[in-house]
Image (cartoon, rainbow over all chains, first blue to last red; front, side, top):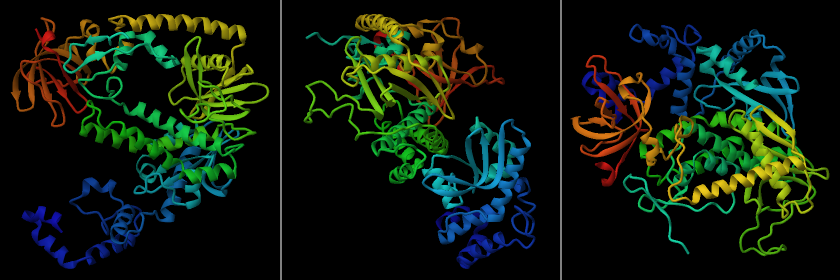
Length: 186
Length: 416
């Protein structure tokens, strides 16, 4: 634990206790992050928030923290909880629809047949004339990697355009996320 | 054999060995020579005291690198699709080709790696700048992936009758064609086709050429915004196709020309024969003028904000520095500017006083970041990319020098 010793002047006792607890402290932290007693959306005083970090409250997200911690502990690639993913996609879809762009339709959760790949579920399908654009959301720790392997194949191998938006953008800056999609539709 | 022509740029280690006109002009090289012959020759000259590379080392700009990487990736993908005989990008065969290539992201990352490898050994790109460029390019990979997929989605291939015929035979390889001749192109789709004409001396590299019994359609991928020059370039390609009797022995006409942008195409008919001859006449005159400019001992400079703003060799061009630049004291905070002057005393460990040329200009305090350049008192220098850094409390004229700021020292003959 060489890095922890940097803070030894102020936090030697705390560091020592973490060291003695071995991995248990991380496992318990992961348990708390994944199963917040309050079941909060992002963070609350039962999991991540305290008076000391009050200025960072809007930035704290237990799901992202859990993904990172799980990856550090077990090597499991960061993945978003399906419910969280669905909520983000719903928000983005509602916002895009609400913009009322003439000639463009946005359909939530529909199947697109991609030549050579077969049916692929599009989280959001934007259509203008005969052109299609599949819009998905990716986790903040998995840049440009689709949560669904079929969608990932469509993104990397297919001839239908696919754009993935960062969940953090949808959560914290929805207009920016929507504008990015609109910009791709042209 | 004539001795090489040399040009003293007045900057240390930068005596230029000037190039002769190229054996063939391309659309972009001709435009560059027309815009500013000095920039053309200084960019392409050899600098044996500076490095062994070709031309003057360029400072890469991330947007330009992004465009190059997208273009490289498209070359790889379209070449693979056409070589495998895919009729359409919307097919299982096309997916198999993409799977074999590793997917769009893998192709783009490989293209980025190749481009970034070219920065190693560039005397104008230090380690810190290289690290930043690599990081910025990496951050743009998802955007590049989307853009390449958008181009591919709108690419029309078509039936192919025979295996691809390489437009440029490997030197030394046995060929069924007379020495110096290239194979004629068959009907079907060809990617990355090099066309040449001896009279006028022209060459061009076509991104996509679709040959049918009726004629040839030419597509060029454009990563920038729409410009009338893109149509001019495509018309020149139509002329090249008409003139290249190796690739097009039957004189098949060009029919449609397409500038392919991300998300949309601009297609227009190719010029007819009178139109082609008019372009040929104009190009022939341009080439004669450019040849004469390049052969002169001191190629003409055409200083202007449009030409010099992004010129990579402006620090080597006395005409650029002779045009009166703005007094740094008049510039707004945050403005980037170039400055020529004499380095005075050090003000601190990383700051120096600079006396700009021009008697009325006040001294400028140049403050360098840890990754920025170092100045040597007593030297006359040309500095590119300073940034005004207002210091309202002291009233001093101050500028900051960061990782992208470059300092070039004048030779003794220029220092007086």
